[in-house]
Picture 1: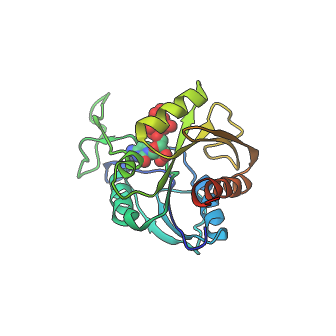
Picture 2: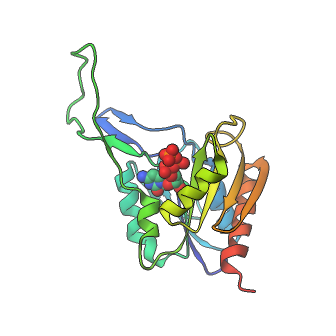
Picture 3: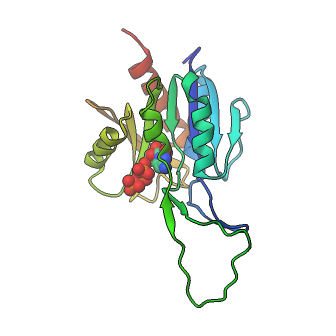
Length: 215
Ligand code: CTP
């Protein structure tokens, strides 16, 4: 990937409820950071849009830290035009509270509900741009894996989907190992269970061969 520019989103987003509370998820950022190492090793100028993570930052990359899905959307859109490859690894919250309370919410009532509204889909928005990079999404599935991933590939109009089987607790979210399928329109490749770093190197090699090597 020498001379190429790669943008990776990673980590979870935090959607504020009030000044001290938020909705988020268990994403550690490990898979995205492993992809960042592999992308840099492959020679790409690598930019990371980083949500909430529980690991150290890759210092050789350009880093933009964000909190919410909306901030992540803005940070991606500002930089996407000059990129060759976009890997959407972040666990973006699909919804956010409709109202963010300015003051800390008091427990006055015995029950309460929070109305949620949908966040913009960053990956799908990038895939709709006229001048877009090669776009790779992730899909976390617990059933009908390949079929669901193919539906997502088509719906979001991306170039490939990296499919995670999240029913297997040994791999994926928050763990140190992963096993993935790289699904393109016409092909499917299994990347066998290994450390996230080895899996990331295999993904980056495969993407470089598949999308950037003319033969
Ligand atoms: N994604 C995104 N912006 C969102 C939501 C998701 O960019 N607002 C990206 C993620 O980074 C990931 C892919 O879209 O690459 C996952 O898509 P999503 O539709 O959220 O799928 P899952 O979480 O796999 O499944 P579900 O459809 O059940 O939500």
